[in-house]
Amino acid sequence: MSQLIRLQDIQATQRDLIGDDYYDPTGKTAYGVNEEKIGKIDGALVEDTTGRIRYLIVDAGGWFSSKEVLVPAGLARIVGDDVFFDSLTKSQVEAMEQYDHDYQYSYKEQYENDRKTFVADTIPTEERMDITDTSYNAPNTLELLEERLTVNKDRIVAGLVKVGKHVVTEECNVEVELEEEHAHIERTNVDRPTDRRIGDANGNETVEVQLEAERANVAKQTFVTEEVNVGKTTQSHTETIVETIQREELNIDRDGNVVDANGSLYENDSITAEDVRRARGM
Image (cartoon, rainbow, N blue to C red; front, top):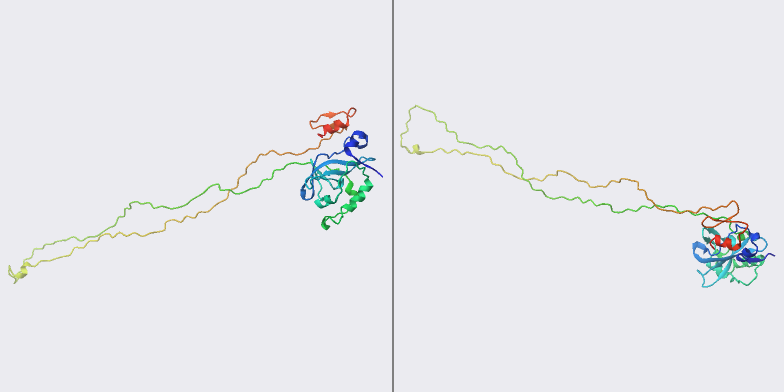
């Protein structure tokens, strides 16, 4: 029956068992279901015969004031410096036993405990799950992240057009042809006898002729001279947005050397467990 020992212990005593390319999740941020922050990873338990990581020690300080539990490594998903337990709920963690730093855990014993814990009566039915052998396979996939620009558009008021009207006064000249009558006196010499006598009453009579003339009567009438419709047209233009983004690239040393954050190499002949931890920023 294989025993489980802390990863930090096997790093110092059995480096030949785990090799140089092992994954150490200690110190990474832990998240549970719905990406709710739980706390952090406080270490890992590995098999003493194979060096395989079987459990992650999770400090669930985000859910409980003080509780460390053992979560099967196969339930983890590693993204950069974060560890996600996509199916791990608060009820499941509450049903788990507190991790005892002084207790000697065995793989088989803890496996049997897990099968009971994840289907405990205190866990809601929809959150219960069956633990299988694959639940203990440590993730061997490292997800590389990159930032991408997401451009959204919103509408703003870029201008305002007001259309109104006002009254303009001006003088307008209109030529009108008018007619008027003038007196026209025509005298004709006549030589004929008459019975009338000079001085008779009829001799004082006068002749009146009315003279007519046209005059201009000015009136004003309003006409519609123009119609104005105010509408909008849409024009498109391309705008270049410059932003700085980041992405993660994989560091591979084909000679088996350890590469630190600055790209410096540690030689295999002289490397120690402390060198490995320092190179990995731990």
